[in-house]
Length: 264
Image (cartoon, rainbow, N blue to C red):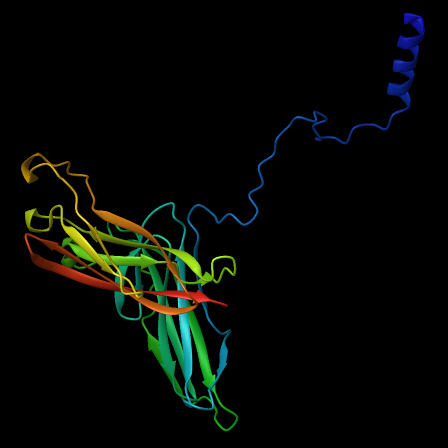
């Protein structure tokens, strides 16, 4: 075909083609990254295992309710819930037994680990009822204050804390689930807590030990933190995991977390 005819048909196609939508990039090689399901940089969320109203079990005559709190992994925060205070970098849960007619409200206060300023505060309330009861009692664990409060001086003392996923789904392919369990030393670490050994007892009867070679305390890195993360397989159910840290044969602290594998 002569070049002049090729140019004519190209111009004709451009004139007859529908106009581009404004703002639409016509290039086919543009790559877009979806953010669906990704939490906000500083999102805080709380929820419960049953929504708002729970029905008392016929055998025990009580309600077992689990309260959950979650923060993004972008930063570690301090969590106050049910009288307990700890570091939170993922999810945490607390279980309460409610009597028929009892409504229990738990306040989850998220704090900045430096200075103690309140970042967010949410209240979750669940009522336990049976066919013959009504709400007769309201129990509150903590409250949301509009004012920021500074934590007590014990905040800087070393603490041994444990973290695990609040809930993990059963995987039929492995007959259970592999769950991350983390233990760490938080707060200001002195020479007596410097470079400890950790022993972890798993529900299947096995034990894991880790011990590190560290430089002398005088030449340490002031920003060094001691944390241990394990990935272990669990069958369906609730399983306690206990860990202890020690130094020179002396146990410094022990901590236990509960792993929940749902399904199966």
